[in-house]
Image (cartoon, rainbow, N blue to C red; front, side):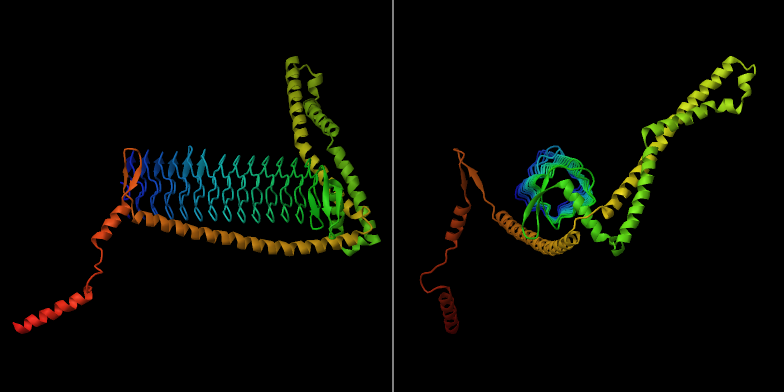
Length: 541
């Protein structure tokens, strides 16, 4: 049924097997709940078709146009969708399973929320710009060089996915899972990626300019040589992460967990925020000041200096005076004393001792309450049972006491330690030029914010322009497809497997049959002569 024209055809609940529908026109067809297996549907125009709830298995659909189609809850298995157009297609909760090939698809503004791409063969070079893909399952998916700019991938599962050299600028990735993802060279500039789980992921050479990575988890991730200029990564987790040679200029790393992370030769400047960090890191930072002078500084020492600068910047005028410093020292002494007490209370020796005392108290309770048991002639068996029960109860109480008091006391101890550390930032001797450092940092941040806004606007214009150009290219491709379908070619296979096209010969014959007469007087003169001769005859008659 190749090259058939079947607009608005009704194929709902039809079963099709071992059939060919190549280059057919089925615009706005109704194929809801269609079952099609082991068939071909190549290079067809299925714009606006409804394939909701359809079951499609082992179908060849390369080059098909599915723009504005409905594939909600469709079950698509082992189907080849290479280079298919799916712009503005709705495929909510659809399932693409078992080696589906979607390489090179164009699905801008498509809706794939809650869809599953299970064991999919490829999504390489897929154009998914501005697509809605919330909560999609893309485990192990190959998205190499895919375009995901301005796509919504919130809560998406990209565990073990390959995103090498893909682009997701201005994408929404908050709460997505990229654990163990292979994302070398990924571009997520200006993306919003709060709370993402990127444990053990590879972001080597990734571009993350101005991305929002607040509270992201990069535990054991590779961020070597990543461009993280002006990122927002406050309270992010970088435990044991590799940040060697990463560009962290103007980045906000306030409150991050850097325990065991390697920052060797990472680049920073005066606009980089790195106060209130947690844990000890490794490596020396390459710091560049406002004059372009570069110095190497230990990451932990730099973090401590940033604490001083931040404390000085945030403290009021009173705390900067001698009286204020005295009051702060008294507060620290009090807090330190309480902290030592809580540390002792949270120690293992105290907890074990307290638990043992509680257990013995419970064990002895029956005999203390009823001393008559010890002196009267109560049966020995009864005394043994009571003693055993008391010991058992005492053991349970001791264990429970240890478990119940351990965590609260440890948390209390930690709170007082943090409080003491916070106060220490204000009272320990700051550098002599602390006020100058505060001013330099404030000026650097203001300059960085201005540049950040300007660069984000420029990048947004570039992304939008690229999308507009892609739309124009789609129109040209669609026009070419329509032209090819409007002028079909009849092919004849010769004995030597050579293909001869008859279209040109047919058109030449057509031209010969209707070749205009350019000799003689021409059509207009002939018509005038015929009219003249008729009028003369009528006069004589």
